[in-house]
Image: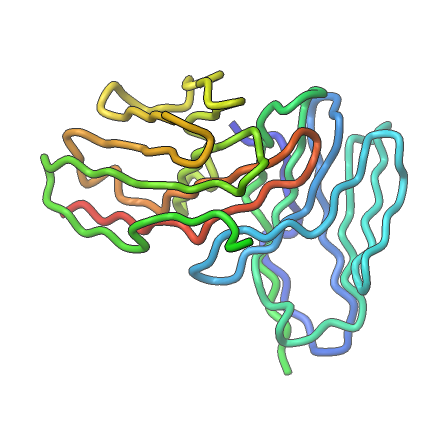
Length: 112
Length: 112
């Protein structure tokens, strides 16, 4: 069963704009991760944020985590056509190597 | 490192036939995961291994599905007999503890 739920399900923006995707989850977590999937490909790990962290940056990506609201957001700044993909959040419920639980993803389209 | 290697990339088979999907994880990763992805259900965890030992196979849909990991560098997912509803993309992923997952490119299975 999915724990993370992304919002919106689909997002279409112009190149150069910022894209924000949100994720909500239900139970306590060890960490939360964001992945990208291009059409016909496997998922690619983007960023991991631990439960004791509030914000993390990686290049044009900014992830926030609010454990009190059980929510996270992924911001992509200055979007490019190459950012077009599906983005998934995944939660790791416990410490140790327990499996990630994935949401159904946000489909991002960046129009040149 | 070549990443997680899955084979075949595509498989078309007739209902009732046996299908074997293969995965070579990244060297040094001690966990391996099999996921199935469909439009309707998203990413579903089928089974995962820690240090070659199956930990949780509760996601395996039926007894027709089985998975093995005879050593740290190889795993198989077998469906016998296959049915049209098994059509999906099957992903293998590997990881180290508390790190992000590395996914393979997937096997697109079509059962006719």
